[in-house]
Length: 371
Image (cartoon, rainbow, N blue to C red; front, top):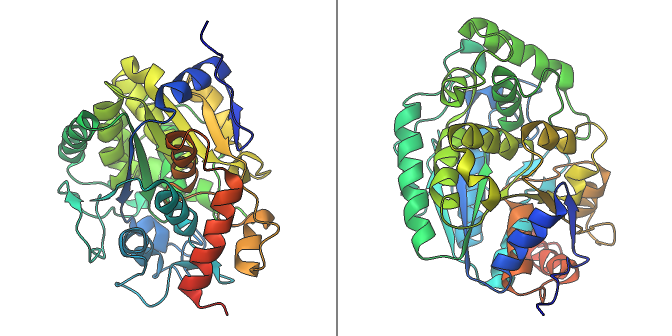
């Protein structure tokens, strides 16, 4: 008799536990590949919208710098590493830990960066997004969606599972806009990289964008690509295509928070058959966030897409910048939750939250020359 698969203590589950266990058991000890789609939206330059950079203008460097750090261990397009106000480091530090411990391959997709990363990447022909207040925020949506699907199909051929992630400042605002255009949300439940979630500002910006596009809440329930075209960002179009391309044949971990919720919602509307191959992978920090509701968003999209999160804890870190994660900063990004889940799975649980925590300390110390 086959032994029942047991969820390790390093992971938590919200939603359909049977589906979650089933998908995890299929990727346990198997070969995975990590991908990160980096993009820009000028929405991030609206003052107060994003803390993913020390200033609104620096948010445009966040995605490409994160990509460079993942591939080369340092940024080339800017000095230092992407930080939030208060010198809190990019979540790419945790993603690096997961990738280094598991030895997973890492591929970068340029999903429309205003600042082009100085590393090799897949190019799907995307350009950076305009402010959603224009009501016309993403160019060539159908083209970059189709190219994302082609890329996903090809990546699926040589792997047992794939992680799809993102780095785009301002992405929770564009996620809210798309989720509202599709009628999945009627209120602001999305997260923020700051412990002081600027909910009123985000809601106001989204309302302005929907009005400019002539869209009411729920108007585009069956047309997510049009929702992305009017009030989304280019990362969404690329990753929706990639998810459909990979999850048609293999399990796919969508590494991210509310940004990936919008991607999952759009992909399921376009191709419901992928439902049983999707894990929404995030972190405990996001699940426990009192100023957003990722679980409520997941319930509204599809209760059969499980939310799996890592139970990593930075409270014992000697570094104030990392301990800030326990105070509501950052929460997720650059696939840090999804990559950690993948590292735990591909190692059959040999990599756990303690191993990830220790590796993050080493990486952070080296990057900032802490001592």
